[in-house]
Image (tube, rainbow, N blue to C red; front, top):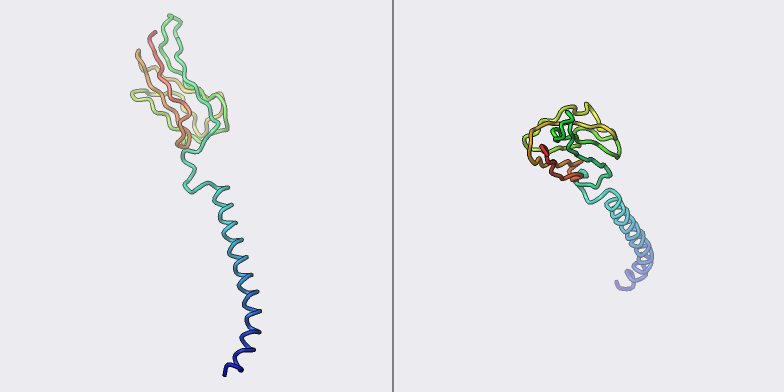
Length: 139
C-alpha cells in the first residue's frame, strides 16, 4: 500500500506548494491594501476634531463713537467656505445678529451687544476649536 500512495503524494505536493504560495500572496496583498486604506482615510470616525485651516477673530468695537466698546464682532478671516452646520459658536448669554444663511465665507461676520463685561467666545469647526477668547466690553 505504501508503494501505491507514495508516487501520487509526491506529484500532488508540487501543486500544493504553488497553490499555498498564491494564497499567501493574495492574503498579504489584501492586508497591505487594507492598511493603506486605513492610513489614507484616517482611523475611523467622521472626521470630527479634524484639523482645519479656518481662522476666526473676535473684537470689541465702539459703534457709537463714545470711546467705550459696546459691541462684539466675530469675523471669519480666512479658510474655505464652511457649511453653517459645521461651525459652532459658544458664547453664554450672547445673542448674535447676522448669521450667514448657508455658508461662512472669508469676510463674513456677525455682531452682538450683550452689555459690559468679559464675554468668553469659543468657535469650533467640525469639533476642532479654532478660537477661544474673552472679549471685554465697556472699556
